[in-house]
Image (cartoon, rainbow, N blue to C red; front, side, top):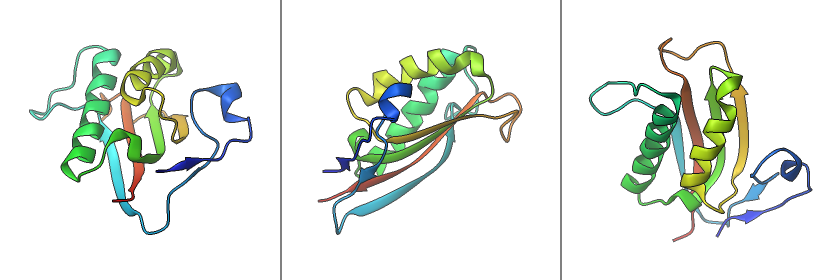
Length: 128
């Protein structure tokens, strides 16, 4: 099990850990930036739907490799609008539940496709 090491800074900002330690000998999985793009290439109409699709894509990539969302050690989320932070936090909470990986959220001017509004990348570690 991954062990959080909190110093109290993260809890002042959001629901994540200041640092997370993976057990020795863990399998590691690197997740590329994952947008809220459906398998058919379409982008959902609303930001909430797009964020839900992005997190669903992350969970699907984890599952395909034999990992679970609770194996996430570090995530970085890229949004193109600060106005979407609260909506994203609610969507993320639905997927992460009480799990608190180390986290970074960045608001950027654009992603690789200008119409995309969110991308999530991360690292997962699992001790089998």
